[in-house]
Length: 207
Length: 207
Image (cartoon, rainbow over the protein chains, first blue to last red):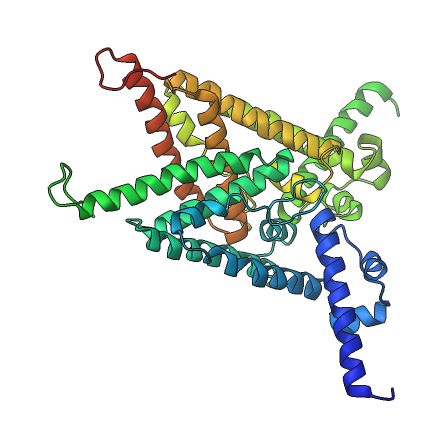
């Protein structure tokens, strides 16, 4: 410990990153419950003591893993110039770009693995899923949808269906199926709004 | 052992049923990986030896648990006189009618917990999910849908979305949302088919 503060912090950051990278790899591929602390330390190349210095428990590590994913995924939803394309682009995106089996959505998976709705890991997963639909609703509003909140919720539902079904079937096909239904729903929601805004149309506004 | 064969068999059946009931309760509430053999024997009221007489491993028990669920759930999909009502009724159904948190679909959950697509438990879950959409397609055909396979797959996707999102949010609301989208899709698929069958309509058949 010649330069305790700077070296300690640098060393600490490196270990923390390696632990999070190992957690991302193993939790994604095997699930949270099937991954032990032994394997995490081995893949991260750290001692058990180092791991526990950074994360009190596997729960704390699972929470940090999802939080890091969240920070990476959420900004992508609202980026891009064409709102309609943006709404559809979420269906082209595979959250875990790994070579192994399709593993769908890490937040849905965590909610399955940690059933207690009051558990911090489950709460984070639920909060992400709500924020995801809110962001889609914001894009739907920019796209001119009549009821953007409803459309955001429907698209989130389709996304979750594609993720869960894709995981069960180990296939990207549910994603393509969800995308085509999403396209229909967007056209219907935007078309209805446009019709309402156009004077002299056959159907009067009911909204 | 005065009447070895009959008493043995009777006793055996009772134990098997109790073990499966315990597995259904615990796997549903906690998940497969979070449930230990100790707890299973304790809730079932059997010895470890008895449990292993009936099921070689926890995997074998998880497989039997899903198979029993499958046998109970699949026939319900194709029953009933009104095919349109039947297609919508799947969204009113909560597979696990327990007092605890919403746990969605046991087959989707098992696929998350057992990631290997070649594992017998994952394979059974995938096969169920495919059979589920096939049965919906059969009902969709009876309802007069233009492309019953596509509609069956879309409804299965919505169902899976409601199950997965309902689990994450601990809510039945995604089910209601899925039902309303399903209603739209059914009307659209059946309406299109009816339009094609009616002579003298504006749009010629493209199918």
